[in-house]
Figure 1 (tube, rainbow, N blue to C red):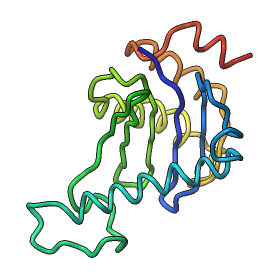
Figure 2 (figure 1 turned 90 degrees about the horizontal axis):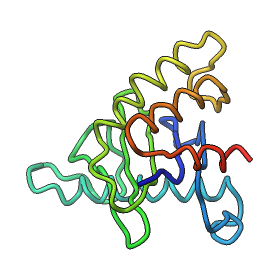
Figure 3 (figure 1 turned 30 degrees about the vertical axis):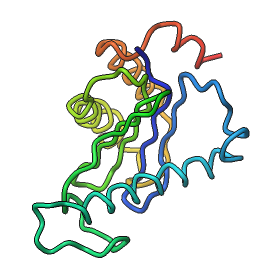
Figure 4 (figure 1 turned 180 degrees about the horizontal axis):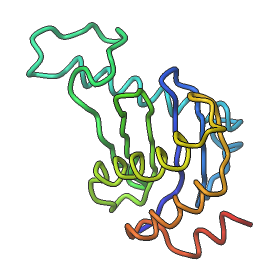
Length: 166
């Protein structure tokens, strides 16, 4: 089992961090540019989240499809699986969104993504005095902690880390 890539978006939908371990098809073969790829990924999850909230059978006051929602409002969208991969999603109360693409056989990663946010993102990014909230960042400490965390959770093998570094 393995991780393919990780996107972290701020509350406005800007990708503030992207990391790739394994991607057999380059971005140029798909979206064209990394920026377009990131916009498409955010748009996909924004649309699916709104669609899920619109179809929520428990909510008597269903918003119209496409209407902006407050963070945490409506039912929560967690993941979808294709024949090739599984796309896992977590939105935290601050509006930060984490998208982790993994092998399609990966289990429910909601708790893993929450721990990634709490123990890695908050510790190595939010608490960093040089970090400007909501802005893109690069941090070797964050990358090392992220790789160790995913390896500890059985989602990343050493070969993937070495291949990503080259």
